Structures are given as structure tokens and as C-alpha cells.
Length: 432
Image 1: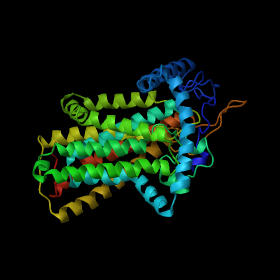
Image 2 (image 1 turned 180 degrees about the vertical axis):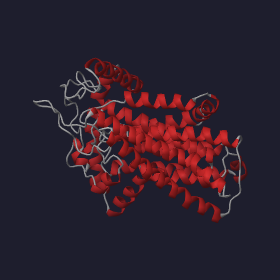
Image 3 (image 1 turned 90 degrees about the horizontal axis):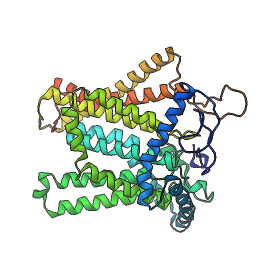
Image 4 (image 1 turned 60 degrees about the vertical axis):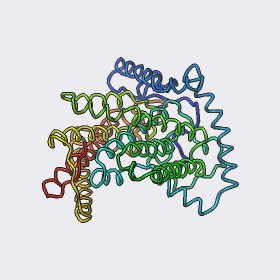
């Protein structure tokens, strides 16, 4: 689906709620489906409104706006201005070479890239860095997705039809460009990931021996990575300058919190020292997903947050289990052949775990009367005008399946595969 058919493209239109009452985005709606009961739905809606306010109000205050709604209206005007800038930029700079260049770089902030790169870091690189990078990616994306569904700002194509967006951009994008624009999570990830990597390794002992050139190359690589991805979002017409600026600033905040402010190390200590920490983390994951804003028409960000929460849960629990098993960090020198064998075996069992979990959960949820793959919106069974959308309990089933599958995949990467490698005498290093 192309960005031209973006759901929720029109800003500030009234969106109808599937829960009744007022949507968490503040618009009035008609009741089309009771998820639990009218009272429970109303309480859930109020809780979502409060959660959305807590997430977005600091951003509004930083822009000197008194409330989220006022900030949203002001930002919407800036999207219109930004769409003109994007259009003029494309008119002056577009070439076939740049088309291919920026399309290629957009892949390096996609889900598929992380699912390819992060396992390699766990199995053949720095286990601790890989784990912390996973947290940085997931925490940043969850925060960005929540802000998208609270501010609900359109993309440039939706306010100026002349903006060029290549069809392949929506094919590469994990949300098919069907989510809202602000902030750009591609720009956010480009900054948070590269800045965190530089900060992490500047504190590494080998940097002292490598000298100043290592720092120069690190900084150059970071700037090149950020500019190639962030400028590409403007060039491809999928984000306005305000979206990219917001993503860059939020990405910087995520990297600083994770690195210098020790958020990742604090989370590690929490995971290692807290009894029954898996159950506590599961409760927190469920809480975040239940309170996730649900704009209508639906956007892909909720299901993407299910993926991200599953990855955090599986990664953190797998880390705790691996450290309980080993007792202490272990370092191993591996040959190239051993690393290649780990990669082949690791990806094989990772894909097997994914297929088995999807098949089992599909059968289980289907037997219980749920539809875990609600690909087509189901119209309201009640007479009269009602919005199309996924049934509440089918959405629950799809969210449960997505979170569970990715939690198992993350656990396989962090704990399951290393245990297999150890049993086969090709252990990977686990440096805490």
C-alpha cells in the first residue's frame, strides 16, 4: 500500500471509537463494539487518555505549548510549510542515483535489518553491546510510536499531493507508510543507534590503544549514517523537516539516557537482582500495550509496539536466564569457521522457533474462537453507520500472538542459541 492511501491521512477529522465515548485521541465517536463492558471500556479510555497526556505533554512543554492539543494544531501548520519545503527540495535535487541511494539507506532503520544484524552481534560480537543496542532500538521506537498516535500529524503527501513518494518506499517501510508522521522514527533510530554505539565504544579500553583516528572514524561514520537516513526521509517525501527534527532530538535523548545516564546498566541490574523479574516485566509490557493509544482508523504502530515489547521481554528474560546458567561472564576466542557455524545454526533455529510459535498460537487461538490474523477489517454488526475495524478480541489475539512470537525469537537469540552453541562446543562470548 502506498503512502498516498495512508490511513488517517486527513488531520483533525473526527475518528469513531470502537470502545464508545471519546477516543483516546480526543475525538468524539459512536459506539460500535463493546470490548469488555461499557463501564470497563470507559475506564480504559480514561486511562489511555491519561497515559497519552503523560507521554506527549513534556514534548508540548518543550515547545512552549500549554497542552497537547494546542501543540498538535501548531505542528499541523508546520507540516503544511514542511510539505512545501519537501516539494521544492525534490524539484531541485531529484536524480535516479539519489533515488536509489536514499531508498537503500532507508532499509537500515527497518525491522528486517535489525533482525539480521542484532543476532550477529550477540553470537559473533559483543553480547553486552548487542543487548543494550536492542534496548535502545526498542525503547526509542515504542516512545516514537506512542507520540505518533498521540499527535496524529499527517505526512507531506497528505497535505500536498504533488509531493513525490516512490512506491518502493512504502514497500520497504515496515509500516507501509500507513502511520502518522511526527516524529520520524527512522531519523530517531539513526541518531540513537549510531550515537549510542559511538558513546559505548569510546568508553571501551581498545579505543585508548587505537588512538585519535578511531574516534575520528567513529564520528565520521555516525554523521554519515545519520545524514544518509534522515535526509532520505525528506528526499523520499515521507516526512517533513519537523518530523525529522523531532526524531533527531528524541534519538539524541534516547542515546544519552541509555549511555551516559546509565539506563541500560540500571535495567541490567534490575533484571539480575529482582526476584520473579520475568513476571514483573510481563506485567509492565501488558500495561504499556493496554494503555497504547488506539486511533481510528487504526495505524500499524500498535502492532509494531507489540513486536518491540516482545523483543524487550524475550531479550531481558533470556539475559537473566543465561547469566543464571553461566554464573559469570565468559569470553571465548573463536575461529572464523566457528563463527560461521554459529550464524548458520543460529538463524536456522531462530526461523524454526518463529514458524513453530506462529503455527502453535494460530491453532490455539483459532480453537478458542479468535482470529489471530485479522487481515481484513470487519464491519460493525450493529445497524447504522459504523466504522470498519478489527474486532476487539481479534485485536487482542493478534497482539498476543505478535508479542509472544517475538518474545520467543528474542529469547532464542539471547539464551536459546548460545545454550545450543555451548552444547556443540562452539560457545559464543557472553561478557555480561
